[in-house]
Length: 296
Image 1: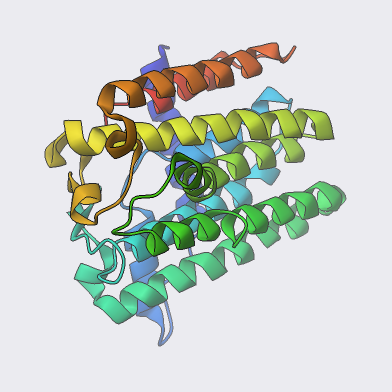
Image 2: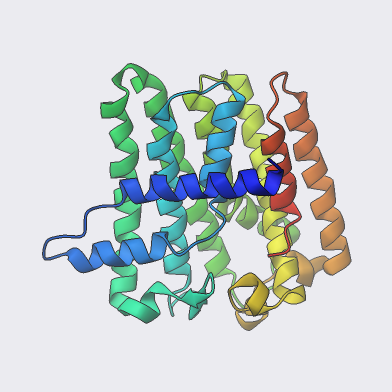
């Protein structure tokens, strides 16, 4: 089976995991469960849970302890997109080729949907304690990473600086800070949790964190490039949104060509670090290459 077919099968399996961990749609608050499902099951590449699963496999993980964390991380990623799309943030009407959550359910319900996904993510991850009580120590460590990388020292921290900098020209140093936290943090979370749950050493987890940081920065710079070189039909979301929101990006700082050169440089560094491990996962390596050099 070739890489493309293997990846599609893995995406389908992840979709099933997500469905399994969604709440039952019942009770007076049923609408929020519907909105959560609408947002979470809107498609997408499922890269973060896939990176977690493949890093887990890289270090020899064999049980389903990783599954609640895969679902939880995708819920956190989805909540961030739901809130990003709100009128107070990026004010986008389309995401992944269909109407955004706040357009379908209203702005107030859009806010609550994001809140619900974030809270339910931790409910979901905590289910691992009941499923695999003998792994409580590594589950606890994984939860610390999940919380930290999503919070003020991770994704939220990056978003705060990003929002505060709108309409201003920021330095490369500040832009790198935003990218390392806003985008890299959840990719770091994915790969670190996979390694932790599989029993990787602290040194190995630290190395995985560095790989993921480089991948995340390259991913975001590629996003900058696609925002000015692709189309809404290909991306499934509006283009030129950075220009509309007066955001500094690598493209505005150094231009498209130099931005591409930097993507190549740091992505090569990430792959080289991955190849240093004695254990190998060729699919993970191919996934990282595709993630960095994607066209949509």
